Length: 173
Image (tube, rainbow, N blue to C red; front, side):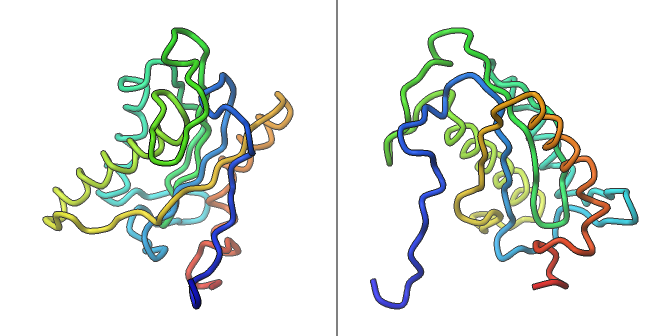
């Protein structure tokens, strides 16, 4: 369609995103609105909406038993996190998701569920039913080694220190 940007595929073709492993995920707020937290030096001060996001994120293993929540940070307008999928049970070994057909236990299904649950809770808290909270889609990266896992954990942990220089910071856009 003329005038619309061409969306790049971020997914690795043929990769099973329900397979066991660690995944680095980033989810951004709609229009990069800084509604989730404030950064003061190295400290993240969660807003009430950021607390909803944190709590929703921590509840993921209750809804997806094959999922483990690893390091995460709720930044002012995005969330960085590591999800680990464990290959226990048949729901954990689902095939690759096809467009429009969610696969139980896949990264796409877990992120979609997280965004939907957080949106419902945030909109209930704000009194804004149906309002958009999240940017369309999300970023994910397959973590392929223990060394890379440590590097990504370090990136997440030190992300607040880099907020002043972060490209997601509206001051830098």
